[in-house]
Image (cartoon, rainbow, N blue to C red; front, side, top):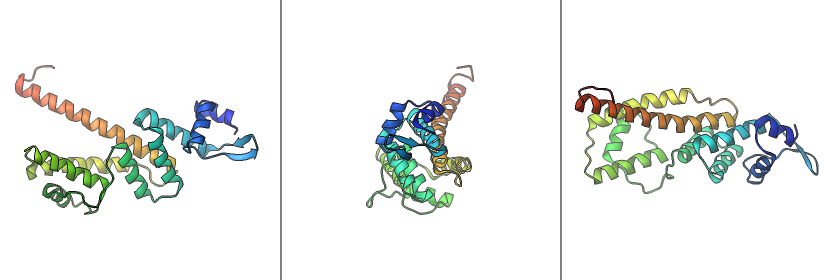
Length: 207
């Protein structure tokens, strides 16, 4: 298909398609002659991915480029998913001298998670260190219950991520899933906290 048809099929303006081509978010089409190129279903999938990452997840052009270039370079799926998590959840890259906390070590042991360096592990250690610095108590019983709940949720999330399909679909399901599921968790937690407060402080009346 030509650019005009690609625009019609995806609902993306020709100007936006040309912008994505210039910004290397969208791979070039097959050259037909000097002023015309042919596009395929892969371009449709990539545009759908770009739209989702921009409109649903809220990523900017540079963040999207970092993800799709890693995919286009043939990065292993584990490395790709780690980068998607870093970008979508705004995790800092894992450093070589990050702080380690006894509480995070305990969580890893309780859940039998791999003792591997990652952005997520570093982020947990930093957050726990801040909480401890503020004098917030983190008993093992609380960490056990929290980590058990999120371990079960994470397992369900990964079941919904298709790893064997087109890389654009992998990124789409992983990125949108991470974003929407994390927001769902926060909303559910807010409702649970509000509900417990109502039951304890207002005799169980309607909010």
